[in-house]
Length: 381
Image: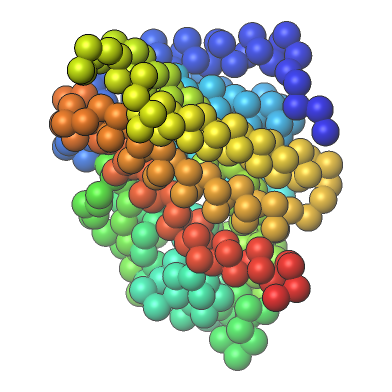
């Protein structure tokens, strides 16, 4: 494994940092307080090429390899202070888009991928239900075959972009008696009869990306909107989860690096008892731990991306990356607040927001406990 970067990749990294600083950081505190998503910033990201970094050129993407894309997302997280926006970009890039690219028909890919990549449309990915979160395959939503298509009935929740998505990838059972092997996947578009997108739900952090619920009441979906064969939902979900768990938190690496730099600067400038607070072991050791978490998070994510790019199954590596990154950002955010003391607790200093945003990491894409279960299973336990 060689994780050194070419001059071209490092130039790209700096260009992304410059773009994020210049275009994506206006009014973050206000949008966070109001829980406002910015379609304008989403379109700016599309025009810059973010949503297409890992997509083929034939659909308008940049065609970057997985490691280059990981570096690009790290740079985005370093330059952009809006963790909700970076999370939202990753959510679409590692769930909705791969599902279409890998399993969609030629017509589906040609219809849905280009506007996603350009930032002109937003796609959601809906698996979670009120009674099936960690136990994802116990989903109760049904898709009953009818003339020309399917009737969908059920309830999806905790859906990133749920309230505003132009379309959604929906998992529903076409044969409930078969469990995981009865799951199928459908594209449901905004405005289809029987499809309700419920209002935005308030949440602790990541407030600049809307999350919500779907209700389906005899929603007719034409047969051509099914992705893959009937019963292929389990394999489609598993393949998407490898990408999602490995890469969805990649931007947090950049956020953690920025967080570390701010903590070091404050520890040098803040004086107490006649010396910079960084001279006290209690502070310097916290900063050392932040550096250690950053480097380990970077390496474990690169390792998962490298393995996936080389054609390996990365279920365990992806679970390790998701588990470590999710917990590390929470712990380093707590350390950053402690280093800044009372200032770190105040909204105006924009330190506490990282902690509120970080708490989603150990929950999203499978809780930390589920990641531990996956890892334990691969260890033969």
